[in-house]
Length: 241
Image (cartoon, rainbow, N blue to C red; front, side, top):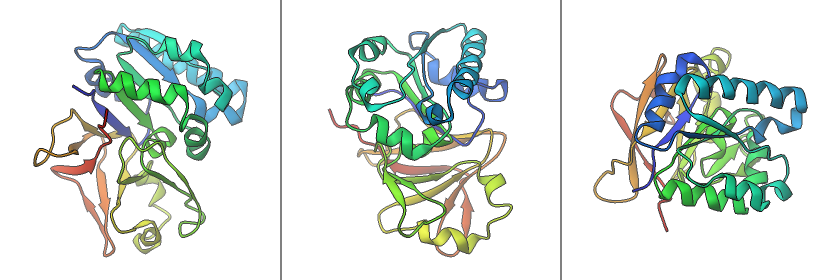
């Protein structure tokens, strides 16, 4: 049975999102793997901040913090980090630069090990940049028609806009249209909010049902306007293997 998945708009490791992290660890080994690769271009101070917040979160959860200090693709092919993923309960990709995160992990030993641990029952979460990178494609909001980066592809047919409530204060709905392409779903996730799935499938296929959880809302972006997700949304998850 594959593990749970959370795509989080913001709030990783903070008390306001503790209930989501508790749910992700529920019934799993209390080994909390934290990967701040998305912030690695910002330097040691930024990484130290994420590692400290992750330590506080792990302590609140009564979990063991396991930091994977992956900054390069060479790091992501290091067998030490692969071994550190063994018996993971929750694997969490935190915020920063989503393109850098996707390029650093995609096709590496660490990413293969993360997928294997998830297929064995570990939960996987990504917040902000982490949520964007877990999808099939990472859009470049400055150049939505031409820019972007191939994502990690766990949630294959989604494109995530995190911090959605803050982002759209300044961006009209029509500016989101270039992100919409055939076969993909554009999702807005408010701050301190997550789209989560426990693996419940729709119509016995690879489409998992995701539901919104947190203080804000999650949104489905269509050509005419955005729609609040009140029930569930079905997303294609790469559950092969």
